[in-house]
Length: 301
Image (tube, rainbow, N blue to C red):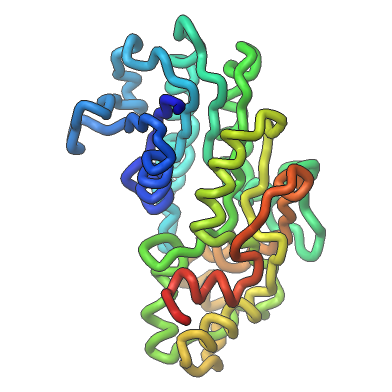
């Protein structure tokens, strides 16, 4: 049994992850804000103002850091972009400083990152060995990952979990897509040729548990299915499993006009990412193909 600390434990990924880890007989302690509900298995902190009781961060085997400002599909103001960046980098820097100064550091620090690290790369096949791309989210992810470097220097095993689009009906991008598709308004975005790298929520949770158990895994780890698809194929399959039409395409210029930089970063960017490290370590995906992942997420048999 491990003692595990999780930030973002009430979120789309954090909530089912916490339940899963508890089912594996781990002790799960959550990081919460002062405004959130606190219990005996939670620690109050304020990362942006660097407020926390350092003694409460002693004695953890694993720390999983998931907290961050949501990447909503809207026009990102300069203030929104600042929140996206600082909610990730400052919280990671503060949490890292608390753990670096602990008497006994954790064995593993697993921090969320994203496939946005690679930027818009067209048809290039991307692995953990690929360099950082260009664009706002690539810069955010790069700085986010660098923020935990002091733990590497302390000798802690650090894994940067570069999440793809996580497929689950209760949150994330898929939940936001459902209404327009159910109304018959689904279709390709832009030319639909951009690559979408995705992962089923259940596989994501299993992969996090796999990294916890696999000491050879460290540094960047791509949390994506081995079967990326073109956006047009993703859109078509979603319409098929929902038994809805698929013809309402949206030109790139319209998306950019409505959403600005968020359209380019979230909807039109292309990244064909492979989970090279998970494959090499013999991780087994339960939902490697998109149809099965969508049916599982939407509880369609």
